[in-house]
Image (tube, rainbow, N blue to C red; front, side, top):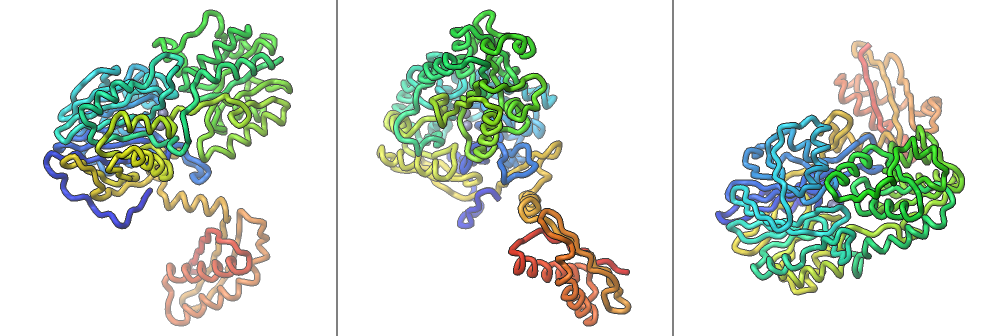
Length: 561
Ligand SMILES: [Zn+2]
Ligand SMILES: [Zn+2]
């Protein structure tokens, strides 16, 4: 259970003419965005993304939204709308399509192209796609959709207006209001105003930066900073950024040309995504600037630029391997410059600082958002959100996309502008829009679905807790052999420990109490193995806790002689 709400029960049947909103992910975390809309028995899904694991998820590769609440109703799904190509919005789509492969996929050109690579990797071929553009309207069952251009840290992002008999819903997706973006495609506030005039009954808005006062700095303000870094660098420059941040890569390419350097990409997703962006015209590659990474290595260091993945410290990424000096052809030298032109996603701090330390140890100069303006956020700050509320004048607001504190801050901004009804929900909390009023009506049970290697959903939250206990507290095994005919312990206990500086001889003190307790149960005629094991676990558990202040995992094994 990701966000338990014990006060809420199963929602009542949706009244005729009502719209139900069921968030399956992204409300209560930054990641795995997925929202289900239900009207007249039919379903529309907006986004289907992944959440990246952090140190509290050892061994987990990806975290998916829980599809369980709609698993029996996949035939009712009219379409899946993908607002933009970020992993936290499209990354779980292949896993949903494994359950029903012909769900119509609706998105912009770049979004569908980035998703396409992912679907091919998962060998999903027979998919149905509908390419849409801002200004277009298209209907799926009872859902009449209209798309609105929004500016974000990836090109071609869309907000979606959803018209049903229950009213007009506007979902911003991820957005900000950069007024001078690189591609000139701004968030279409005129469309927001027009929809506001028509009457927006429910407005779902991006909460990520609601706590940040003012306005998000323009992407273009990075240009002079990059320029300065290039001017000051006498050797190779390595820039790490998100593999989907086309405009950031564009700025690096432009700086490279200006300073007479050549550029190569390192990292599989960077190579793949930038080829897609170039082919579709979202990235303008100046002639002659790109070379392949091996050819780049033959040039003098002052002519080299590498654009790399790994800006979040991902241990297997190109940048992490460069920092460890384990990359097969990029060998960092003292005096090289490394730029992390990226955000620092909460949870990744330790990994990122580990990489920065690794790079610094070899004598590289590391430029990152903590010491230079080499990154701006892709999300609207408080000032921008206030503008939106004043322009749209919605009847009801549901903050989405963020941790609890972000959603509360976003809702408070809506209230400031005079929005009368702000509804707060987390994953699984059901919001119904009935007669123009949105309210929480119940919850559905949702959990975290962990992808670990080839397994999807086999690792449970309980097993993850075990992994954490094993990692933090270690492990003790206790083997006791009993003779139930004689009614006493015949061998052992044999105690072994791992994961702490524990010498097995330390356990001598607790052996006799274990023997006494087991003998006592046996003499009472109690030879149930499970009960004997529980007794052993309790005795050693209490002893370790009292004498060593630890709570390791204890595996008691009682065997019959
Ligand atoms: Zn995004
Ligand atoms: Zn997002």
